[in-house]
Length: 207
Image (cartoon, rainbow, N blue to C red; front, side, top):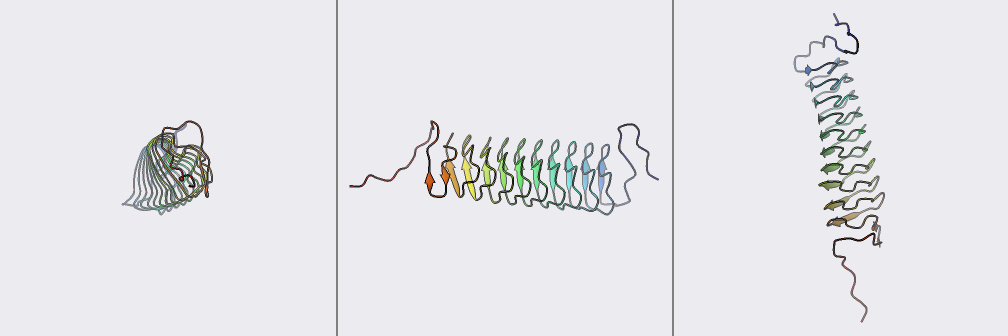
């Protein structure tokens, strides 16, 4: 018999699925046929019904997951919006926060890949790395605020503080060095931006 909630408390008896574990108020609350799940923290995996092989640790981590498979979320609101996305890894508060159906993403750091919704196969490492990326795929960013404002550009690589900081839709992109000029790559067009601390390679003058 379900346990009646008291005040703001949300809890009930979890169906007898021996390979599923829940610790915390509301954790795995709606689980019915989901199996091989582990939830630790208030409302972790609270809406999961038939998703399996998920691990959620932290307040509301994977809180909206319904049928997503093979996801790992560690941190407050990590992968919070994920519903059907698969094989994602989010470590850090609000990492992959708005991911809904994106697959095979890895976000390590507070707010890394925060705005991603449907993009897949992205890797973001560092606080706010790929913060504004929404639907882009196959991106790799490392260290603090890489491609912070990038939204839909794809197939890019950035190394160094604030590299490609304001890139939005340019593809493909490559940036190396601190404050590498933002918005400089758009197809074959290269436009210098504000003062930078990196060396620009230019074609030799015509003899």
